[in-house]
Image (cartoon, rainbow, N blue to C red; front, side, top):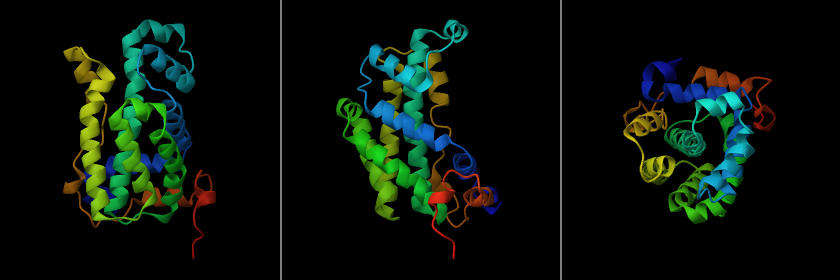
Length: 222
C-alpha cells in the first residue's frame, strides 16, 4: 500500500489502526481509561485494585514468574501506552487525510477522556490531567496546525513523566531499559513522515468490513 511504502515512520501505526478496526480492541482502550481514570493510582494498593479490575487475578504460575513490583509496573505501563498510542493516532489524524469511518472511534473515546480528565487519576497526577484534556480536545476538533503541535508537545512531556510514574523513585538500570524500550513503540518523529501519503488500504478495508465494530457507526457512503 502507498501509505506503507512512502511513510515507514507510521507504517506500524497504520497496522495497529487496522487491528483496532477489525477487532474489539477499542473496548480495551475504553476499559483502561475508565478503570484507571477512577483511581488515584497513588500507591501499590491502588494499582493492585486497577490491575485486578483490568486483568483479573493472575494464575499462580504467572505470579511465580513476575515479582509484585514488576506486576505493578506492568499495569502502570499499560495505562501510559494507551495514552501514548492515542496521542500518536491523533497526531496522525491531525496531519493527513483521515478515513471518515475512523471518526466514530474518537467519538467513543472522547467521553472517556473527558471523564478521566475530571477524575481522581488526573487530580493526583498533573501530566495525566494535561494529556487527557489535550487528547479529548483533539478527538472533538477539526484538524489544525495548532492542535498538531499541542498533541506533539504534550506527548513529549508525558513520556518524560511516564518513566518516573512506571518505575518509581529508585529504578534499577535493567528495569529502566526493559520498561522504557517497550513503552512507546511508535515514538518515531512523524514530522519526518511523508505528509501526502493516503491511508493504508488495509485500514480502508477494515472500515468497510461487515465485522468491523465501528461499521454500524460509520457515515453512509454516497
